[in-house]
Image (tube, rainbow, N blue to C red; front, side, top):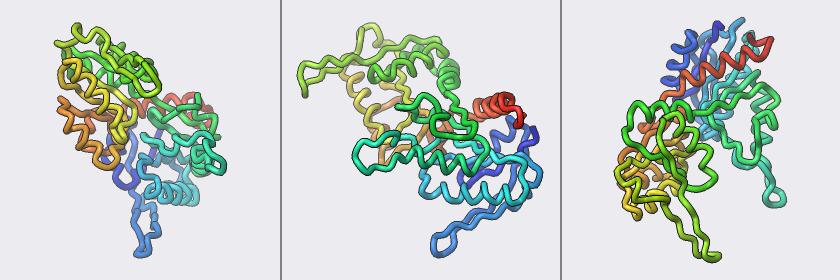
Length: 301
């Protein structure tokens, strides 16, 4: 498809991996800050007549968003045939309704701005909490890929005698999808509410699973509080130290260190956000998503 991929800063390794999958060329951008903090962006490799992909995980968007917008604009000015965006982690999906008077619904605004800048978008497991599809807020073709199959395959290849664990009923569908690919059993922790402030959490059939390695899977590990609480319940039930797996390694503050201190066997994440815990490469998943999306949109195929 003759793509030219420009990695935004700190995205170079992931962009090269994607280029290998797509047999694409890597372009060079110069991105730096002026002394006053304003961004400078220059396309060193010419995008003229090329199908451009900007590769930018949108973690810390306050730093990364404006350079991305400037890059998209200069690509068009220099004659790019199309400008697509691969954002393995897509920010500003949390605020999807107005909870209090006067609140900005930032997911809608962010989507409108990105839709003005690029021709299409591919991302991985965005936080679609109250929305069913990215098309509800994005006006360009927007593909949301799911990492559950490749996480399941990684587990099948690397972990023996495992038990997938979901922290609550909301996680059941996600954990089940991973467990099916990994060919492993799964459980979901049960909450028994005895009163407004009296909630007991139990591990179903705990005795049955004591020889297994628990595996906790979540889409975003930010504060890690959900995983830490789940680990405490597993420990109280006498289960083995767990493996913790996340798609997006956000790890705000000291969350990674706090999770390590819980005596986990291992922490593994996908490379949607660069982090030392990255062990699962999303490049093939993303390349397949790009090819499929272009095959489904006539003018892009």
